[in-house]
Every structure is written in structure tokens, then in C-alpha cells.
Length: 404
Image 1: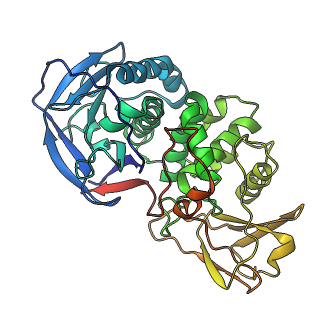
Image 2: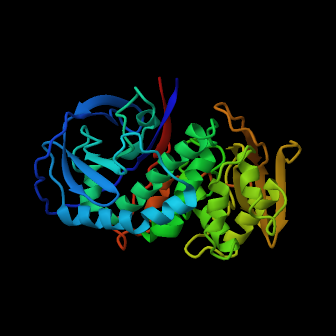
């Protein structure tokens, strides 16, 4: 049986902080995964751990031999308890495979090869833990200790993100035998930050403002553009606004339905659009009009000859006065012009592992290649938010790994 290990990675500076030693209530240990190479594979390991805190709905472990910032841990636990009941009421109930009525969080060094100067793997949820005889037989999340110590607000948002994945697996797979498409599962996890964590939303908006390729539908894009997570975040924020800031839009999408993922979304936005294509066009149009505070559309203006691969559900925005003619003869390539904006969309609804792109070839009068976070990072100052993750020109920082 295959399981998807859902985890979050990021690259960022780790600040120095004061640490507190843990107290000793040891366990036999846990099977875990750690980052084994730059942004790609994982290696399995077995760690001993110590209980350092227990709250009404949490049991928190720290990897033995590591230290933690007690005030950061207190903050993360307080944020979890503050939003736990609301998150369950919106996204559904989670399992209780270990019969303790609580979620276990294990904080450990997920990036042992990269020391304290960078962090690649931020956290993950392993569905195998919920299957009898597989994993650690626990309702459990695995989170990076460095990010607990140095960015507790961001870590609090990441934990609520991962909790949605745990709930989602129970609601869809264990209770109904059907796994939700990855893009919608991740979008729902991003919606937890829309509701509960402004720190993550601010970070996502800044990431969104450094890209000009918008896509959450084709997950783990085959190109080196970090678009998935910021696009999903801004899209869910937009849905929330279009539904008059009513959390029921997320609740109704999350509830199990034996229908396609995009129809789950469409059923909740009938006053906005009746088709998936129109909904995506309206999203980009509205962001360009400033409906989501802090997010903007970067229009491609002029470049040298270049070809941009447009994957299913991906969109590009052009300054229509500068772009000239674009070949739209492919039946899957849809376009919309509005107030000087030309939006192109690959309307293919394929969600498998081998997506096919439509190549958008720009004339010699057009020049800006896809913006990568690494190239654009110098354009903006991030000093006002020390928690902000630095965007990297590598494969996406967040991935779904198949475990055999």
C-alpha cells in the first residue's frame, strides 16, 4: 500500500534564541524521516523522545538530546488550543488510533545535515501512522525544532496546516475510501492560515508578489517556479472574501462529496462563477484589482524570445498593450482580456502524475522570463518580518512523497 507523506520544507535564516532543557519522561522512540539531501529525498531514522508538555488536546515530545525554547513552546501550544475546536468544527474530526484523545507533536531536528544556519524540512504528517501495523500508531505530527525555537508564530500556523492534513485523511480516506486531490487538500490546509494565522498569510502574500506564474491546480510543478503554496493561499483568501468572510465556504468544501475536487469548490461559489475556467479568471482579475490586501499580480511585459510551459490550471497575466499576438489555437488554452490585462489559462483539468503543458511562445517584443524567488528576492526588503521564509529557486519547498 502506498502512503503520501505530506511535509513542509523551507529555506531561511535561523535566529539565535535562548533555550531551556527538557525534563525527562522518555519513550521507547519513534520511527521518523529527516531531510537527507538538499530539498529532495528523505532518510528514515529512529529517535528517542521526551515528553515536555501536555495540554488538554496535545502531548508534546522533544527529541532526546535536543533543547527547546520554553516560551516558544508555550506560545505554539496556546495557539493550538485556541483554534483546535474551531478547526475540527470546520474541517472534520480526526482519528484517535492510540486512544489517548490527543494529538502528539514530536519536535526534532529534521535537517541534521544543515546545522543551525538553514532549515529545509519544516514538518510533516505521515498517514501510515493511522493504519494499524503501520508507522507509529499515533495521531501524530512531526515538526522541526529549529522553527519552534526561532519562529513560533510561523510554526503555530504550520501545525494547524498539518492538522488539516491529518483530519482530511480521516474524513476522506478512512471514512469514505477516497483520497482528495492533493491540490485541494493543500488549499484547505492553506485556508487554516486564512482563518487562524496572520503570520503565514503575510508570508504567503510576499511570496505571491515575487512570482508571475500562478498555479495551485498542478501540484509540485515540473518547473523551478515556487507557485503552488502562495497561489493556493491567495486563492483561498479570495474565496473567503468573496463569501463575505464566512468560514462555511471552507467547511462545505472540506465535507466529503463524491464529486471532482474543482466541483466541490464551484458548488460553494455559484454567485461568483458557474464554470471552473471563469472562476480562475475572476480570481486573477480580482487580485489585480486589489481585492486581497497585500497581494498583487505581476504582469509579464516584454522579453526576448522565450517559451513558457503552462501546466493544467496555471495562469499567466500580460500587459495586453505590450504583449502583441499570442497563439491561442490550442483548444485547452483559454484567454480573457479586461482593462489592459490579458490572462492565459491552461483549462485542462488533469490531476495525475504526468501533466502536459501548453507552450506559450512570446514574440521578440516580449521579455520577462518567469520570475523566480531567488532572482526577485533582492527586489524586496524582508527585514520587517524576521519570520518570513526566503524563497528559493529550487523545486517547490513543499512536496508529497510516496512511501512504499
